[in-house]
Length: 187
Image 1: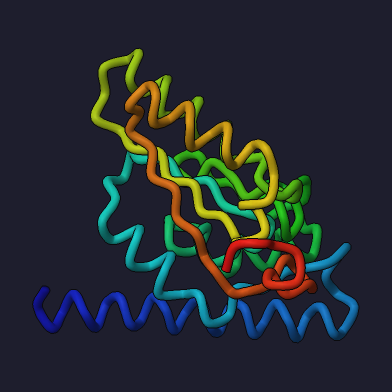
Image 2: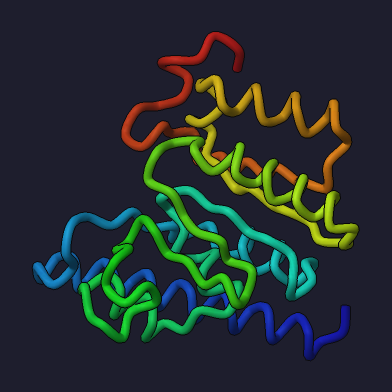
């Protein structure tokens, strides 16, 4: 990778970090409708993965998905407007912080129910297989999702059917507010 590509990726990570800071500041001022879950410190995961993906590949994220929406082409203005329930938002004020979607860029959403997007990624990969495309579906999830049935079912079905799906764990050692070590038997 040349210096120009490295600088571009660094700049993208910086834009995401600044957007997350703006989201946090807006939340503290009471301007964000509902809640917001930030991914500060996880920018490199989204930027690095998106750099390796094709424009028509699919991305599914957790409720902590601002960084993925931004990495897949959403603008800071679209994301912040969505958080503030503005019609100019990414989902026209219908999604909020935990449901950012921009299908035109392959960002097929962030989902508030832990692990609910994993079977959807499997379905998108199955669709790509049926249509004969080279598309890949990528499901980003937190370590807490490893404790739900949909995680195991999705990984198993994807492996059995040899689907073009990639599962990426963004392990921050917490299940929202609970340390993963407190509720998982296997380190």
